[in-house]
Image (cartoon, rainbow, N blue to C red; front, side, top):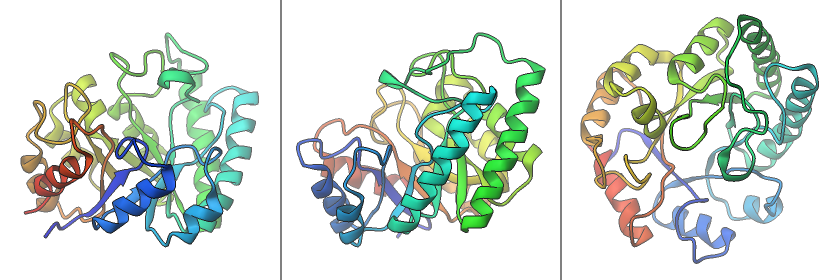
Length: 259
């Protein structure tokens, strides 16, 4: 039995099924489910499934640093909180900037200035207050800029951790994505130990390929033991493609995080 709450991104598995059927299949196999953008989903139908949703995207558009982008981010975060309440979803995911087609930043950044850091911190303080008022948690996810998300500011795990520690709110935590961290930084066990109580969720996929554990270079059973040793018992989510059969991919994920 896993000591963690295991969840699956419904965006990346059972791709031959309609979305509602994907989350039902994930639930039937004993997992919680996660979704990306809610704007293209039938929220009432998702809520009616009774599926346990652990995370969803917490904004539609916006940035952490420029006035227009900040307004968009805060306005769409409020909309997202309303949807999260309907789905009884406790966590809402954010990135360093809005992402467009192919995961590329809508406003790519070549250099992150000190002024941008200060602005991002103030914006995230406002986000955390929104989360506090709604009784939910916003998660700031690290991304890799070498393969999937070039030009994204505040993308490294070190960056997201620094911002979360600066805000210092229980309603803003880190979505520590180990697939992205392996590509951009490595040294994963030391990273999770350093992040500690700032972690609100762990996301996983193997490298290269972004598929289930056991298909690449990351030894996820060792990650699971390290998480358990530090007392982490929260969500661990597979945000990766199935290398073949989706049900088999989910079972491999479960095995990697069963101690």
